[in-house]
Amino acid sequence: MHQTFDIVLETAGLIVNIGLVGWGVFLILKRSYDPAKIICKLLFTVALVTGDVFFIRSQTKHLSGGMSPGDFFTAFMIASSIVACGIILSIMWTPQISDFLTSPLTNLFDGGKEEIDPKPYYSAAISKRKMNRPLEAIVAVREQLAKFPNDFEGVSLLANIQAEDMKDLQSAEITFDHFCNSPAAPPRQAAAAWTQMADWHLKIAADADSARASLEKIIAKFPDSTLSFAAAQRIAHLGGAEKILLAAHDRQPVFVPEGVNNIGLLDSTEFLKPVEADPAQLASVYVKHLEQHPLDTEVREKLAVIYASHYKRLDMAALELNQLIEEPNQPPKLVAHWLNLLANLQVKGGADVDTVRATLKKIVERFPGLPAAEIAQSRLARLKLEFKALEETPGKKLGVYEQNIGLKYGSPYRSPRQL
Image 1 (cartoon, rainbow, N blue to C red):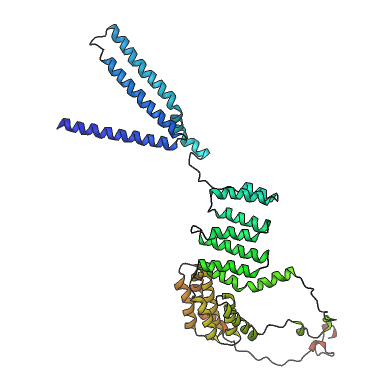
Image 2: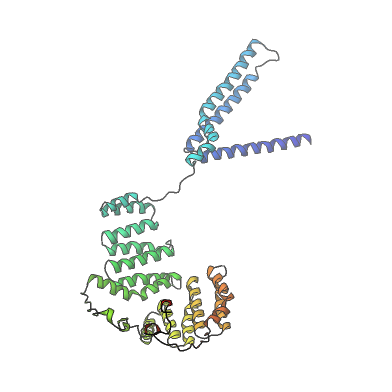
């Protein structure tokens, strides 16, 4: 029983030692710049130690019970072999041992031997672009993209050079389309690329149709998302942008009307104020615009304000705003803005406190933890004061006093000198 326990204990110790040695070898190989060289050293070390062990065993067999002159020579040979083996191993493993002992200190200064993730470098391409050598810059960018084909920074830089420096919108569009149509392209980067392409179509070529086509690619690839919503907003306002760009390219003479003479001597200047746009006419324009671009939130919001302020139709204003509020994939900030606007229109339009409170509670319920919910909660606490401030204060009738009393002669009030 004693012998069995000793065998088990020795076996466990051997396994632990082998594991420790293997773990140490693994760490050495992992941290080494040349693992093949380390493996060669390990094999040589095993062979050297094994050979020395066999040499010592062979020499100890010749030792007798006493200490004869031959035994002294054998002992000297054994000691010499051990010393020689130690010297050889120390020389061979000194770099690794010193690196292991000093690495905790040197890692504080040089960052250690952690591998740096490979990444593209576009400094050469940017320098060539600044020197007005776009073709060489394109070659430098393509060299990096050959190694990192899905790098958006490089794709964007290449398209920028093609569009802005070479004025080659077709090549820039091909570059962006190749990246955006890849399954690995992140949605936000793809949307940013096509949006930038639309801007170039407007800015460089004044081509609203091509810009619209670029934005429609976002809607087709990411339907029912915030990205497609933003693209639809841009499409709805392309007409105005095109007019501005065309006016910049084809400037017409501007005739300034003659000013009013002796304006300081006029009794009234009310007629000089600009005429405000007719709300009814604006509402008609907005309705026609929404028929073509139903996702234009800016115009629908303006239409709701006209319904509430001009037509006094709070129900129609609420209908337009609720359509925006219930639209899916809307940013929380916009939804909270529309709910607050609806509450403002309800307060001014004569709705009761409970109706306004229900509108503001939607912000708290939908966006708990956001600043908009805290602002709505604060407004709910002072909602009655808000209604009370809108109540008309009863006016007081003032007496009738003599006019221009200071301009009359023979005033009954005399100065002290006259008394």
